[in-house]
Image (cartoon, rainbow, N blue to C red; front, side, top):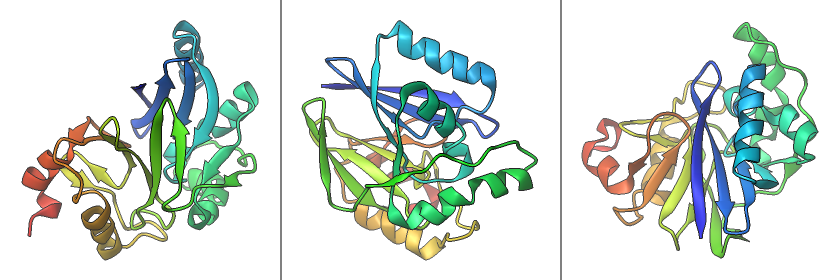
Length: 213
């Protein structure tokens, strides 16, 4: 079994996820820690729960989801893993941060290892990697069918969807990704989004104004 922790960090209130198994191994997804005190909070959280980080995964590489990459790499010796089509986004994060008036150093080298349709095992469950472009070219979701949840990044939120006005974004592509890869799941599947509260597939089918036919 796994346990999902949601931690909210940074100037964009980004949700960083830690998924732990029964042996206290942990996946870190989208580290958004920007301020030094947030790094301290994350470190103390991991220590207090006796968690042992083993992988650093990115749903996508927009700056609010990678603020903490360098610190995670330095602290836990983990290489950020992402989809090929978001590599250019990853490499531009430092420049984009400056456009927002934010300080950010060049990111450590990434590993292009997240491929649509591939499955990795963790905590006794299979996690499917689902390519869901539209918010960014290489956005992915991580789906755990056994335990009934999906980490959606900025593809789908409670009552909203990811913005598509950033480079590489496309509204129609995003709607297609959501329709074909998320809305076809069971209604009780929990959706852990990149911003805001958790939701379910069924709730978004009914109430999300962007998904009504």
